[in-house]
Image (tube, rainbow, N blue to C red):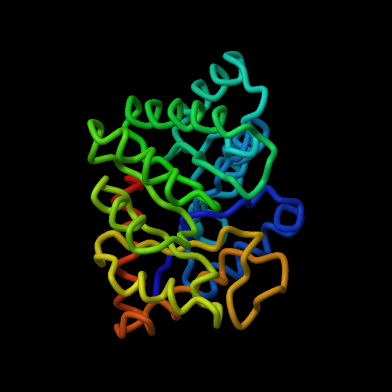
Length: 262
């Protein structure tokens, strides 16, 4: 079984300090591709460094994604944006993000989040790279954003660690986006989310860990989460959709490879 963890923050100290072992454990359960996702300029650069220095260790390919997560957008200027654009040209960069909207944290005014989300949106479109979209406590805002940019559909990208309802998922699918599920799918309280997961077209499904966060059952609460644990999310998704684990692993991995062109 081969798996692709489409969203991890490998530069987090809890993972970076043992990254060789983390990658070895990932390869042991069949995870051979990992996207390392930046949240600001520093971590975007670090993602590139890790993709260059660790890709291939234990047979695992590490790919970099660069961007400003919405909670890291306050006070950004053109110099920051120019530096990010330069990073996009690195050969190991396969996507833009994570970007998006967040009403849970109050680190960045919402109008600024929207502005920088749009900047990422048009950058990804110009560079023909997939866009990684963060959403927390703002489903209707994401729907509004996507529908207000309908002229750009279809767009390549991912609704990452999806926790929304069917209306939001349907809008994202109509826009051309993939839907990625993380450890929350495995939680006992996630029946509504599993109902949504059953309805996503197979060719748009992805899995991720969002390491070092969101450890899945049966490891919920045990941090750090790490890429090898994506197997638990895959298992839950296969059970939810009543398909064989190997079949779904093959399909989600093929989806990710096609999306990121790796």
